[in-house]
Amino acid sequence: MNERRQMGALEAEVLDLLQTAAEALTPGHVLERLDGGLAYSTVVTVLTRMHDKGLLSRVKQGRAFAYRPVADRHGLTARRMRQVLDADPDRHAVLARFVDDLGAGDEEILRHLLGSALPPQTD
Image 1 (cartoon, rainbow, N blue to C red):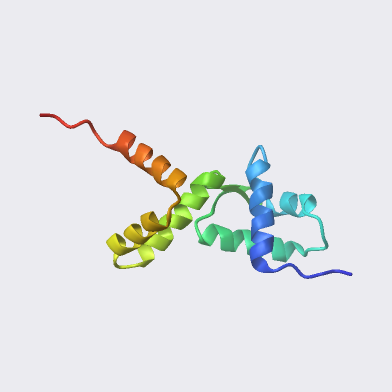
Image 2: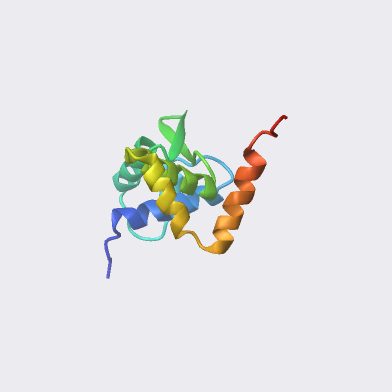
């Protein structure tokens, strides 16, 4: 039985594959490494959409493009968080609610990161 993957699941699978690859991969290489009977055009479409979303960079390699993630997993998560924050006009309210919802451990990590990112104060 050939179950059809949802686009989000396929994008996640492709992203995982590209994250672990030592070099940029062409659609043909991605297709070879994926399990399942996908069409080449499906892989090209997914890679193109991910590139358009800013998740992947690409370089010309022969007649095709070769793709690689623009950041590691943590960088991509931070990027998504920033995009969500940028989509709301009231940054203060969003950040305040975000901090209010943090657990004690996460709040301490954030305080430490902010403290080390701030320049030293001069008297």
